[in-house]
Length: 195
Picture (tube, rainbow, N blue to C red):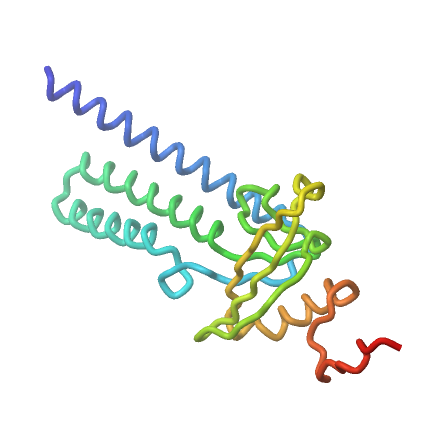
């Protein structure tokens, strides 16, 4: 009797997690599709651009599914199928959540939380620095809630070398009127002398 109850609890918990993961993955994909005027996007996961843990979990679930198919147990196949679907949903959610999006409106920090998008008009200054295969941009910006105070927030964004030139053009276009960026000439110190 106790093993039957534990068995039922296992299937209920596995089903609930699978359903929750499917809903979360669907919401994430819908939010990505709803992004407007995406100018640039790139993968930012830890495993060659893919999310590390969800990729490992997906491969493990597929391996267990192969073992269950070899053994031929229907119950194990169903459990492995649910775990594989859970892995696919987790992978999709984390893949789209870790991907970086730059739109006409601003830089999307988290696709699942649209209020975290940093609008171009909020950016006060930025610095870029070459680091390995990426260029790290550090943006200093103020949120609407912080307009009355003097505190600013920092956003670090790693741009891959393949996207750096396009990103520089976009930053120059969006911030060039307010922030002097990508000027080839040296600063003329004499222009600051008192007249």
